[in-house]
Length: 192
Image (tube, helix red, strand yellow):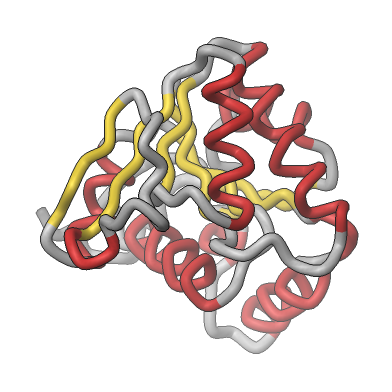
């Protein structure tokens, strides 16, 4: 199973974020899962990729051509795929993955996460999506998603497309065995 991890190209100010990246990498390697990610060597992305490499685990990086420099690209990926755009990058990462985990990150992480959730809602993929809530980082996002439900902008089925957890092991268990808590919203049309 390949797990797509969205996370920051910066490490953030808390050591908890880096520790979580290492913990995710060890948990993936312990279960013989591969990593799919943005291909970077910096920030949390670099931490998780290096830890996976140290564990002799599969690391699949996907970078657009304009970002593929020696300073940015992680040169020790099992596969480092070069694509033409950020849009192609997100699609290629998703195509190579069986499940998704979001760690702390900035705008890029949020963009990737919400595009994957939207595509899941529309029925364009069926990969389960989990968020590792490290040190309360995603507390406000969880509350915002609850507000979307309470305000009638998403259905209970859509609300169930994302699972939040503070521990990587139960989150991985869920990704491996249960997938989404809800089926794709049956009221939505399907596009191919």
